[in-house]
Length: 306
Picture 1 (cartoon, rainbow, N blue to C red):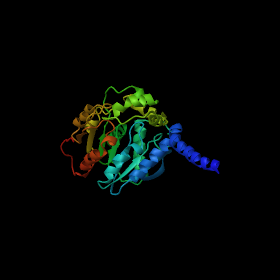
Picture 2 (cartoon, rainbow, N blue to C red):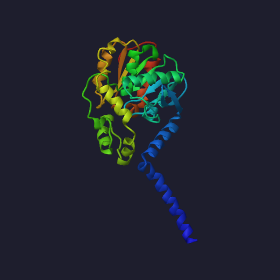
Picture 3 (spheres, one colour):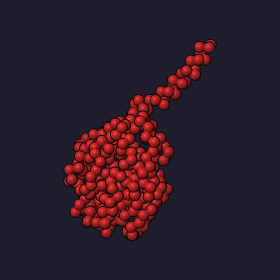
Picture 4 (cartoon, helix red, strand yellow):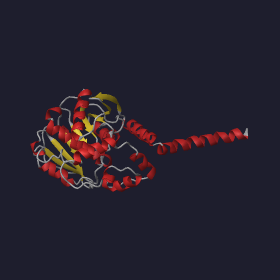
């Protein structure tokens, strides 16, 4: 009887230890828990669709006029869900997609270049039944992708919002900080991404860097060739757009966003105070207010800041 009483608490303690430790020992478990918890917290629904030979994961939050969100390098739907939830409060149905090799999407069947990413975003928008004039909102390299769509295929998008956009020449951080493969590199990258970096516990960083990086490397290599620079192109922007950056961005200098907006009368410019490159996480409410203000106005207004 005593042995049975001892085994009960011991078994419970063992199970608890497994539940707490397993996500860090098996990163896929940790990533799955993070993704599921974020979707539950934000009320997101979703699934997967076939698009031009690729399997693309998608999610949706809210009801109303649609807007499509595109993540950046090494990003995924989960990263943008805090912003999506805030935009939903402004009466929008926010749809998000994972590019191939990111988030819950399968690895790419073909090399993932910026042009390929743009093609897949447009094809996914069509496959999901969203109108051709659906506004596109991109973060970081996703903003570059959205800009490329608006310039190369303006008939396939509505207004555009470019959050923390690259696209013009600047000196980027070294590869290990752009695409960390170790917890140490991830910790070193945190001050570039956040104005006030959150606590960086090594086990959590280990889970974060465990994601398969091949598609992100392909995407990064494609833009580092210079082939997709927006120099000489953004001046011909025909779509109405908003460029918005974190005022303390240390990854992509805010001057890049200012320069992009200055080159086209169709582009507004706004800054979010007390935020860096991950403004989508740091200040989702303030960012959503800027995006909603822009999308709700009938025509371009003056540049602003917050």
